[in-house]
Amino acid sequence: MCGIIGYIGRKPAFPVLKSGLERMEYRGYDSYGFCVLNNKDEPFLYKRTGKISEAEHELSNLDVKGNIGQAHTRWATTGTVTGENAHPHFDCQKDIFLVHNGIIENYKELKQKLITEGHRFTSETDTEVLAHLIEKYFNNNLEQAVRRALKEVRGTYGIVVISKKEPQKIVAARLSSPIILGIGKDEFLVASDPAAIVTYTRQVINLDDNEIAVLKPDDFFILKEKPMVSIEWSPKEVEKKDYPHFMLKEIMEEPDAIENAIRGRLIIKEGTVKLGGLDSVSERLKKINRLILVACGTAGYAAKVGKYMLEEYAGIFTDADIGSEFRYRKHILDKNTASVFVSQSGETADTLAGLREMKKKGILTIGITNVIGSSQTRETDAGIYTRSGPEIAVASTKAFLGQLSTLAMLTVYLGRQRDMSLVMGRRIVSELSRIPDLSRRILSKAPEIKKLAEKYKEFKNFWFMGRKYNFPIALEGALKLKEISYLHAEGGPGGELKHGPLALIDENFPVIALCPSDSVYNKMISNVEEIKARGGCVIAVATEGNEQIKELVDDVIYIPKTLEMLTPILSVIPLHLFAYYMAVLLGHDVDKPRNLAKSVTVE
Ligand code: AGP
Image 1 (cartoon, rainbow, N blue to C red):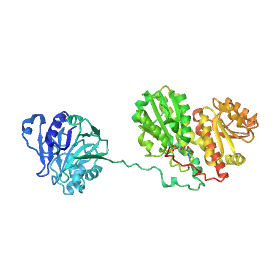
Image 2 (tube, helix red, strand yellow; image 1 turned 45 degrees about the horizontal axis):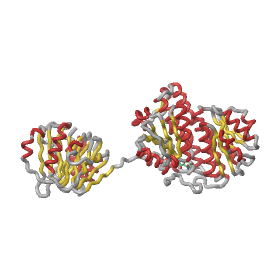
Image 3 (cartoon, rainbow, N blue to C red; image 1 turned 135 degrees about the horizontal axis):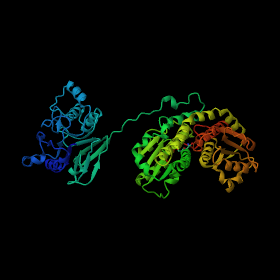
Image 4 (cartoon, protein in one colour; image 1 turned 60 degrees about the vertical axis):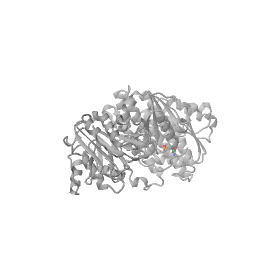
């Protein structure tokens, strides 16, 4: 590593540069050099081999004018230890001067190309290539020339660049090699090490990768290069194709959404999952003992399902909070708390507000997001893309299944960091791999569900009920129906029926009961019987093969058997279809329901 420093301000630059190098000599000391600009004469360029600490006498007798300069102490990487290979390096015209810490990996091919374009080199180093590239692109704006030159570079760099043509400007840039800006009083420093700066100021800014700083005698600014991301969606994915509505297309894509979420992430043999987006925080996640899931609307209901999954199978105390409530709640947090934000758009204001609150408090933030490059993905510490593809209809359907599938994988990921056994991990992961095909079996029953909607289209009120993993699905089913059919629909836990909602029930208030064959099936049947005893009608979502439920209820929609924790991924599909067909029968704008928007980016 090398030591680099730059200075611009009201003092003579040379003494500042010299003292800075002396403080950085530990970083490399086979040679050193200076370049100081002044308005009248040629730049002062001084390069020697050896240690700067052994040249005190010679250097202290130099009379160097100018208030802007750069210096470098070298630890040779490319090019032997010679005066010519010492930094600063310069271009053909000796107008542009540059010091560099790092390695230009593709310097050979760049040098070859520059030589064929007529550039003349004076050193063996990789760094000099940059000086000539900047010269090539210089067009009366040093920072733009640096920016363009760096686009051709592969490798690492911390650089400081000055030019005779713009003598009151320092440009610094960083990729992997540290660059620190020292903000003094009417002076600015830039260095690869705080030791070179601290004598002059303790106010510093650490440049981030892909940032370019421009320092002038009285001001500075930072340019941020935004890395390009590619939209993975194809144009045809954002068209209706031959579907009458985006919502129906997106419901029919629900198996694909599950498949996309799990693709390449299930490691069945090891009973675990690979979630690359969490690699950077994997160690921190091992230490957490509390999770807060935050989301709104449909995503909020996915979070509520996630609560059951994570508590039962990862053994982590989990809160699931609606974003608009979370952002104003008093948070009881500690260093072992982590927060997870679930959002299709990644732009929901209430969810983002909670995210920013957690960032302020130093709480680890994880995103479960569909839209690539959205605010949520850029502001969370780490995350997992659900990969559901574009969801155009305002009513969220396939994204919900992507969220549930991702939460199931997060459960295995965290569970296997804890005491989830290999056997349990394998059981969940191998069953999850079956869910896309199981969900296709449900979609094949769409005509049946359409008939049900026709049968119930005169009713104005609906109650949805479920327990445990299916309680949030009851909430989601009610939301889906109300938001596109404008009918009154409520969801709640089956156990709450007798605490009030039962008063609503009569023959005009149909109930959709989620009764898969799971740990609370008998309790749900009791609720169904309470409804029937009061003349209510019940549509049950039940597990294939359960014939006796037909004796109890008015209609049954069957779903395939699976693990209790994965049932919600299946049980919600009939509810999405039911809501869709009801809204179509009522003649509403299914894809753009009144009063709503796809992404609620305001509070
Ligand atoms: C769901 O059908 C609604 N359109 C709405 O509740 C939505 O789920 C909510 O606004 C959250 O959106 P997000 O997933 O983009 O954050």
